Length: 307
Length: 187
Image 1 (cartoon, rainbow over the protein chains, first blue to last red):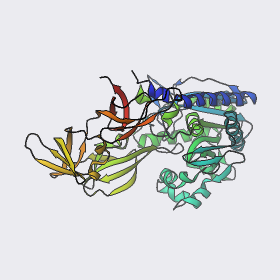
Image 2 (image 1 turned 120 degrees about the horizontal axis):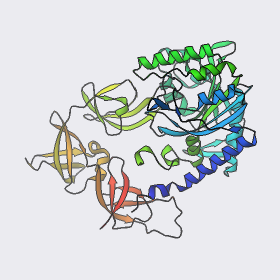
Image 3 (image 1 turned 90 degrees about the vertical axis):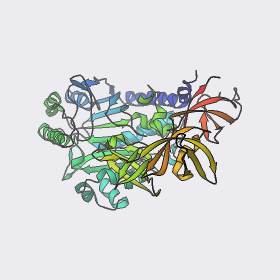
Image 4 (image 1 turned 30 degrees about the horizontal axis):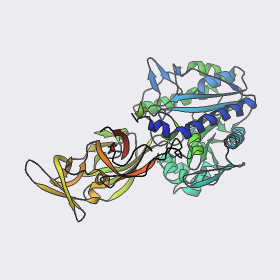
């Protein structure tokens, strides 16, 4: 029987992926981050407008380990990371799997700018360990990984690439469409780019920018048009966090989505959380970029359809 | 009714009373935002193509098409002829109307013809077909790194990537929806 040939055809990509994950782990361990494992099955996922959790009995499979990781920060752990499987219902495309691998890391006593520096060193050094000489090529583009990378405010990205402004896009409910059609295709085509300062409404767990509360201290990392990571200066105000969760719940109800229980144990721990910054990076997508693959299917052994 | 999450390549939907077929499809979801379904659509009557991005809340009606079982007969001057074996009625479709289905038209294959107000617009193939490989480079065992595939040509002229062990004269099964190799067929 030859059904196994598809798996055999993935061998190079799977080997690269395995080495990449090892290099990522090494990077954080060398820098005194503690590797953490938190439960996949949780009673209350973070309520977000557009992320759907998979129900598992009365509980849910986590959509990211974020809430548990932050409880550890609140308990006094200063530098932690986790590499784990996450689950999001209905997400399937060239860059999406409903079950995928996230890398999250958190630092206390700092803000999201420190995470930009982390991203630069992490990806540059991991690529170096895998034998890349400071650049990767993807879909015929050569992308230079040598830091520093570009930092581009969302506002500026709209001015440069979009036919309308950020506030017009938000009021017309066209933010995602403009991002996908007009902006993302230009992001990180020569070197990686940090797209930063998102409108406050689009950072459910992010702190508002000091001095300009219309924006959230949030960034997304893009390489070759692919969104790789999402980072925040973490919101530590439990009252505000509860309100934002309630808003997300209302928005979910309006869209006809299921409404999750309030993550009370997280909210109870939040007042003890020091100023912190945290980030989630798509491990499968980083493997795609490094392996030169254009579909997420090519860097995992099994997709849901192949089971 | 279909919702946006039903969208996929080959789905036929009704927009402004015209039948459209989805020719390209991708799911995207930028930065924790709402999901978008990017489609290329082709008007099945006049072949006009356009791109459109849908959201999860969008809903569609199925295209009002009739289906008729017919048999593929022959190709002549870019037209493909099909016949209803009951009534002996014949219809012709252009290469453009067939789209990728033209790659899988085996002699005498039975297909579903789609008609809109009695006009033939397109066909639907069986999901799986078996074909003979007519051209393949021999597999050089030594120099084949794992992970390699090789191109072959099958009896309809269609080219695709297969595992290295597939040889000229082999019968293989193809998924006509994706155009991809599935397995080698014994004997």
